[in-house]
Length: 223
Image: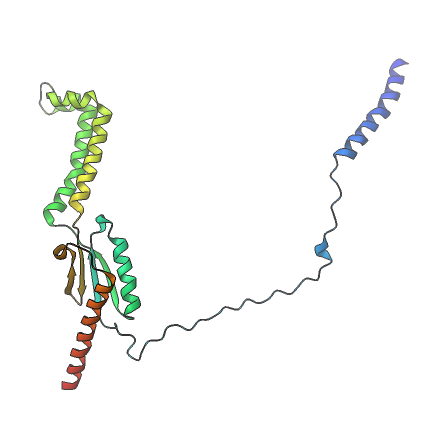
C-alpha cells in the first residue's frame, strides 16, 4: 500500500518537474524575419568596364625590333633591381623586348662551389663516425685534430655548415649587372663598379634606339 501511494504521488511530481524543465530549457520561438516583408530586388547585372588599351603608333611602338638583355648576379640579390629596370624600360619604350638572365661566375669558381657541399658532408661524417672511418682508411688511430672536433661535436658541425654556406655563396656570386642593347654592351657594373641609375639607363637606351632608327631610315633611303 505504501508503494502504491508513493508511485501515485511520485509520478505526478516527476511529470511536473519534467514539464518545468522542458519549459525553461526550450529555446525561445524565432523572431519573425523582416526580410520576408521586403520586396526582393532583382539582381543588377554587373557590367565590366572596358578601358581602352594604350595604342601605339603604326609601327607598333618605338622599341619594336630591339632587345635589351640584363645579365645580373642572381645569388647577389640583384633580381629586384633588374626587375625594376625591366619595368622602367618597357614603360618608357613600348615594344622593347627586355630579357633578364643570370650572369654566371667564372668556371674555376663554379667548380669550387660544387666541391663545398662534398667537403661539408665529409667533415660532418668524420665528426659523427670518425672512429670507424679512420681504421677503414688504414689509419691506426685518428689524428689529434679529430679529437678536438669530437670534443665539441655540435659546434664543429654548425661551424662547418655555416662556413661552407658562406664560401659557396661567395664562389657563386659574380657581382655583375651587365646591360646589352642588341648584343652591344652599354653598361657594365664589373667595369664601373656601380649600378646604373634609372635616368642614366633610360638615356643610354634612348640614344641607342635613336641611332638604330636613323640607320634604318638611311638604309631604306639607299635601298
